Image (cartoon, rainbow, N blue to C red):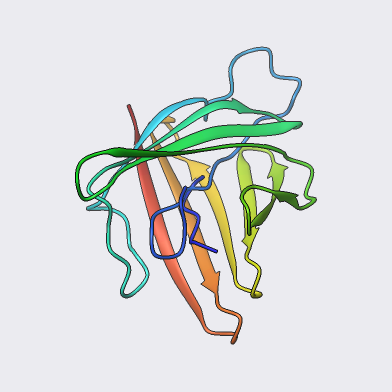
Length: 159
């Protein structure tokens, strides 16, 4: 499993994972929907992880039923690598890749996500928005199969 970052790629790379959501009764678009640019200066990576040159998360749907997003990371050659996800937000685990499952649970304007890999490793994160909806902060913790944990913070600015 690779580390997921808001909604993103994974351990060794940046993965995203994710966001907060509003109640399904809202008639206006969810404040998480849109493009988000990863802020390298404000983010805190786990020890030993290499920061991407550029990373963008785009959320097209965030509601009580689903979370749908894509993450674009520029590789060292400047070419974009895109991963896309569409998963229920009901707290149950669903496949999001060949060796990874994820669970999302919405609570008001906060989304909690858990990614699990095949060897017992996990990445748990909680994302929230600033008061002006222009900054998204995801606090995460990676747990290895041997029980070792490490925290990280991903900060995104609205594009």
